[in-house]
Image 1 (cartoon, rainbow, N blue to C red):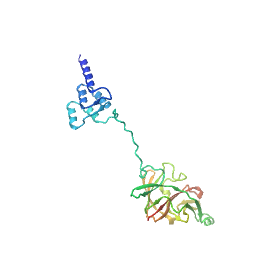
Image 2 (cartoon, one colour):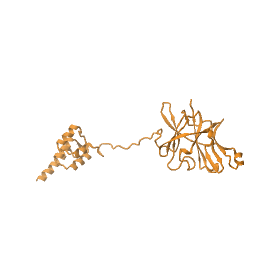
Image 3 (cartoon, rainbow, N blue to C red):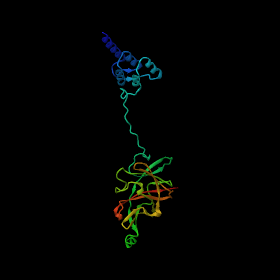
Length: 282
């Protein structure tokens, strides 16, 4: 007889708090009623997690729940956000936009120039790899008659008097990005900034030129015009990414980062990789 009365009491409580999903909204009083009716703790918590709720979670309200014998586990369920709340839209993950002007953001492999906008902001500009319209060899006769002891220079000519990428800074800021495997350039040999030389370009009437390689007896090297070579400092900002700045201020003019891939005993053993830019100080 006692069991029958208990069951009837539980049914009555459920009818009071409302069983129909979509209509029932649990409140503090609803929880107190279920606790008073003797419902198991795990059943009450399951009910809280599967129902719409409108709880008063103020300090006085929580103190009152404690006085009415509501367990701490039930109150935690009331306070904790539910993984799924009927009637509450499920939030979808919104991808965080990547700032292309942030050096730490992912970038395609290449060399980028950090420029300053009119409003004082910073903008990264990718320097396109320059195509040499013509390559010529200087000191050919000396190289031949000395049996390779005297070195011959290979000069690259770039079309136009100015590069598209421009900086107004004496010490422009560059960022070099390398892929984890593979490299910048035509062959798989450029993997770090140390393989680049920073050279000034000689401006002619319709093109720019510089010595990009020197051929000796069984050797070849890139960026060997010492008079036009500038040192630059390199800082690694993350794996495969580097910040490069000239060690000293650059004068107004045309410049380029130059590297040679797979340079062997002859110039044909590799390709010249050039990234050109200009400095405008006025």
